[in-house]
Amino acid sequence: MERRLRNTRRALAAALCFLALAAAMPHAAAGSLRDALAQRMAQRGQGEAGLFGHEDDRGPANLPAGIRIERDVAFGPAPRQRFDVYAPPDARGAPVILLVHGGAWMIGDKTNRNVIENKVARWVPRGFLVISTNYRMVPEAQVPQQAQDVAKALAFAQQRAASWGGDARRFVLMGHSAGAHLVALITADTRIAQEQGAQPWLGTVALDSGAYDVPRIMQDQHYRFYDSVFGNDPSTWAADSPLQQLDGRILPFLAVCSSQREESCPQAEAFVAKARSYGTDVRLLRVDKSHAEINKTLGADPAYTAQVEAFLRGLDPAVARLLGR
Image (cartoon, rainbow, N blue to C red; front, side, top):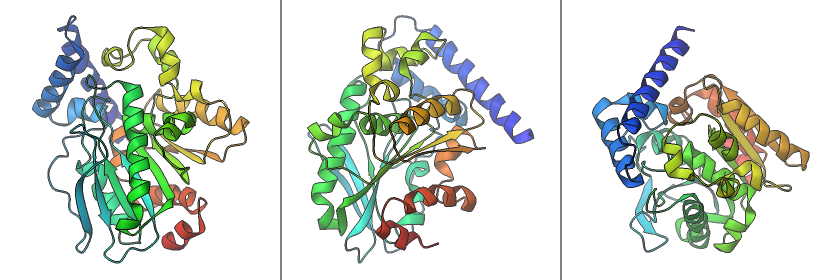
C-alpha cells in the first residue's frame, strides 16, 4: 500500500508539472512542446518520465556476453527509421520479438535500458532474436505515419530475418506505452501492416497502453500533449484508435495493464471484450506495477515474466520449446 501511494504521488506530481508546462505555452508548436517535455524530463529525473513510463534510462544496457548485435539497420530513409538486432551467436530459425518503445509518441529510443536490458537478457540466451525499433516522432510524423513505420520495420525485419538466424514466420510484436498503442493499432487494423508488405505474425503483447479508445480519451479531460498527438478534429480520432478499428478476429493478443493507473485497465478491458466477441484468443493481465515498472521488470521479475511467457508459449511450438515449462 505504501509503495502504491508513493507511485501515485509521483504520478500526480508529474502530471501537475507537465500540465503547468503545457499551460505556460498555450500557443507552442507540437515540436516545441515535445522538446520542452524532453528537457523537463531530463531536468527532473523520474518525475515526468515516470508518468509516461520513460524514466531517464539512457546509457549502455547491461547485456549478457556473446550476444551478436547489429545496430541501426535502416528500414527507411528517415534517421529514426532504424532498428537494432540482438541475436544468439548460433541462431537458426529463431523466433523474433520486435520491441516498440514508448515515450508519449514524442520521445524515447530503441536503446533505452528499460526497453531492452531485461528482455534481451531473458530471451536472447534462450534462443530468441530481439529487435528494438525506432520510429518517427511527433511532430515529424503523426500516429498514422508512426504505425506505418512500425509495420514497415516489421516487414523489413521479416525479409531479413534469415540473415540473422531468425524465422520470418515466427514474429511477436511487443510495445510499451505509446509503443503498445501502435502495436495494438496495427493488430486491430491489419491493412496497415499489409500495405507495408508485412506477413502475419504470431501475436501481440501490449504493455500498458491506456490508449485503446482514443475518442473517449479526447472527449474527457486529458493531458494537453494528447492534442499534439491526436489532434483536435474528432473525425480523425477513430482512425488512430485500436478499439474503433477492431472489426473482426485478430491475431492472438495479450493486454497487460497497470492496476495502479485509473484509466489503464478499463481501456484494456473494453478492447479485450470486443476482441473476444470476434473469437480472438485475447487475454488481459492486470499487474500491480507502475506504468514504468511494467516495461522495466519484464524479463527480471519471475512471476510477472512467467505470466507473459504463458501467453507466448501458446503462440507456437518452437516458442514453447525455447521457453520450457
